[in-house]
Length: 92
Image (cartoon, rainbow, N blue to C red; front, side):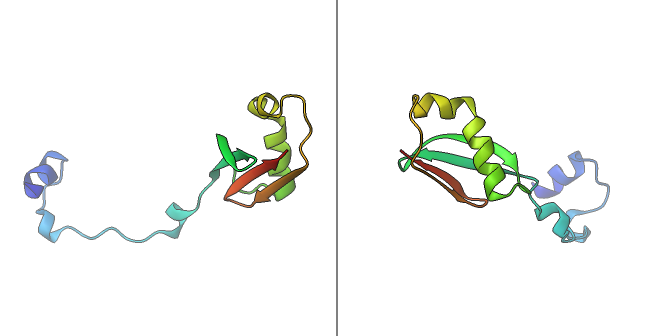
């Protein structure tokens, strides 16, 4: 079955003599991170941000997001915890 699929993909050689893919570290570098945003420990939404942002920049972007205003409901947060490249938790 694998040989037939290999031929339908346009390869003329046999799958058994094909080269194994080479490792390229550039494929593993993430440009963006999908941060889960929690309010009092309960995940409410996710926000896609640039991976190069600092903790302060991530906090600013989350606080500017329209869904943040909805969940804050006019209250100000007591603390905003940012774990870089992992999660944002807003404590009210």
